[in-house]
Image (cartoon, rainbow, N blue to C red; front, side):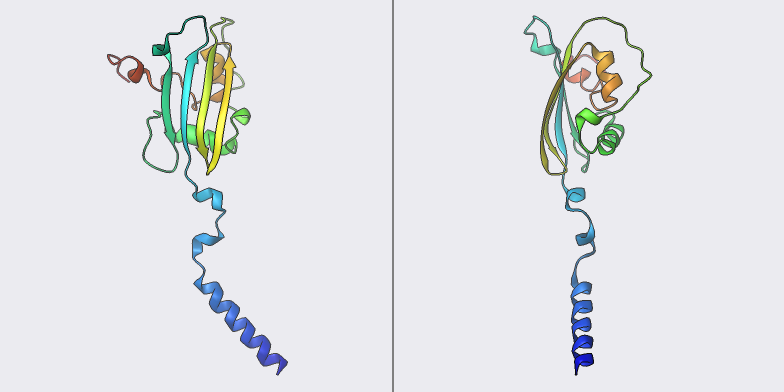
Length: 149
């Protein structure tokens, strides 16, 4: 009797297991969308917003305006979506010119809200620390309609 009860329980468990979709075994955050608005703004005494560059990074869909989407998404994936953990080029040599820029990210990464901002001494420092994520040429055409990318 005990043996037949165990066998019946095993059959039920196996049948239930076969009914569970294959994607259920994947971590839920892997299927979550990631949409980020990334901006780079000069940080100086002017209020000229025309120099602000904005791009959209969508890693799970074909949408977005980021020119180096694959590379930027790979870097964010490696950093676990943590902008403070981005590692791009530790050997970069930047001129010691103070022309501060502020990088901002807002949106979602793997379904979790993201709000991040940091000011860098210049665009070279920004690029050396964030790689392709805040690439300076990201929206040059959007800022200057006559520019070609």
